[in-house]
Length: 156
Image (cartoon, rainbow, N blue to C red; front, side):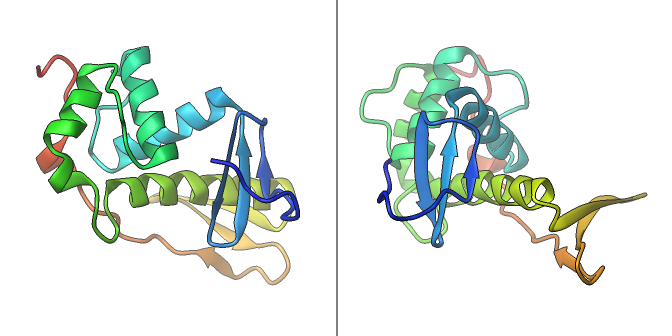
């Protein structure tokens, strides 16, 4: 996806993928975007972490970037096509959540880089607080579980 040139980039790791979400512009290197997409899919329970073949990752990246996979290149792409009605085409579908998690992570990384947020480590994991007023700024939001329609490597 591309974005208008007037909008400044709010996160940038490269120029291979440019997307806008909620008024923010994100520019990613291909590797950064692919890693973020795979991580988001794993957090949603749609795939198992670090088990995807390169073609499966490419189909997942295509789905996230374009909202669809026109020509599946892998079993994952075929799985998405077979389960399309359960995965995409409605409010807050899988594509929405993949993008939301990718963008949330990029936004947080940029805020940390600019010194606006500071990670706070606890026994439960970590959260972030504002460096200007020490208040927590990123609340843990429940995310949907896509395991009921998950893709498992070798499941075809």
